[in-house]
Picture 1 (spheres, rainbow, N blue to C red):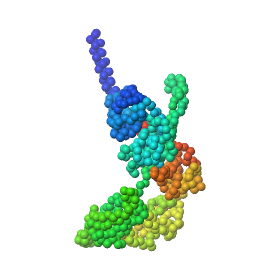
Picture 2 (picture 1 turned 120 degrees about the vertical axis):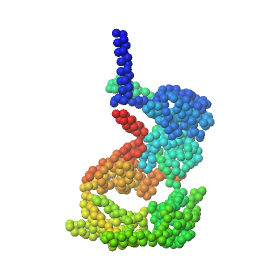
Picture 3 (picture 1 turned 90 degrees about the vertical axis):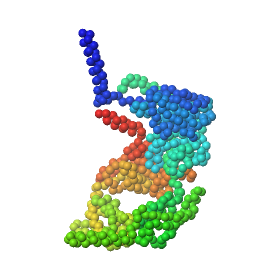
Picture 4 (picture 1 turned 30 degrees about the horizontal axis):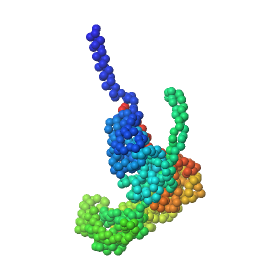
Length: 637
């Protein structure tokens, strides 16, 4: 009997073991650990005074890792030599390399870098503090940093304080204390002493903690910040269970101010003029790229060719900073290496524009064909045509036409127009060979047109109707052969495009009644990707958008101080803030044949609460983590 029970016990153990092994991959899974590591102790102790130790050990209740410590961990005062920070078992070890300053509060802000080793749950906003003197400074200054142009939260950017109130401190001295923005653009600068400060944000490319590179994004505040604190009351709730409240306890706590500093960052437009590069991709064209716009074209002189009337110059940006030279003469573009002198204005070391002359040698990346090669190709084409004639082929004539891309969609938007895009500049146009006709009843009626060269690209022409399109109208655009003559001898073939214009009921309209804006302002209507669909000025407090296709739209308003019709960045030396931008707080869904009127006070809510979340590209990290956790859990099934 004992032997029977012994065998039964062994069987039970084996069965339990097998069940346990089989349960590892059970469908319902185990409980997901969402708790971050908890602080246990530190050496020196947090808040220690008269500390002289540069090695710090911080212990937690579980094994931890550090995520991107060089990016997420910020030490104040800023360290010239990078400290050594690493995770070891349940501890974080910090070794400061700089000499400790006297009578200064040190803070190590870990952000969310500390995570548990298994699930990666971050310990949010963990900060360690000590003082080398007899006082521990505890003031905190916090706020939000946004991109000035589109109100996107800016993640991972330094925000710093200067007790030195001179404007030059930002461009010459390291910050006194720093913080780092999180995924919502929020920042906190801790361990601040009482006093007055100037506050800045800096995309510190060279890690010297002051503004030294023109490519660094910056932000500055017009007013001084003065830290303070006040006692506030909060209500802590003790629950019996998830539905029943046990006790509500009132607790006093210290709240630090200011907690709502709003900074708007931008990159300054620096007009450092120089020739960035030159290239000759094909024998017939070469390009010059400058780093900034100029008031006039550079002066070019050929050294092995005659430059007089030799080019068609294409200014693709309209600002003389990107220039394409199309060579008209075959004797010139067949030269393997073009040699020329180029005179232009150049920004010297004193930031002054001075004359400069460079010598350029431009070799085509495609070797031009010689006369012998062209003649050989001609004879081969003639032989091929002769073979086709002998075989009795009907299509024995091969004609090369000038390629052209015709934009004439059907249905056509009521505000749209026809566009012709060529692969090279034109040498001549026969206006009489271009026809636009409208069908009226069963008859086709000729309409006047206006052919306009695009202001930014000489190879693009816009065909504008002499009168507005009619809703639901039928049109035909036709071009006779040889209407357009390219720079290199080819003509266009016949073109025919039939199209209809949309019906009036296909459209909707959005009308904004705007308040709180400057006298000069315009509104950008945006698509769901935050890209501009259309812009209109604000006139008498109204911004009206007619003939909109159904869809979802956002809107932003720009206070256009200089009246140039575009957003303008700031200038630190001139103490000029970037032009103000405001977002309408929600995305508008527009249906066909509907008109929507929206009341919009641009200052009725803080800037960081204006831009709709669906338009933001910078999503909060916690939302990303939740999504990743859901995906991870779903993969177990």
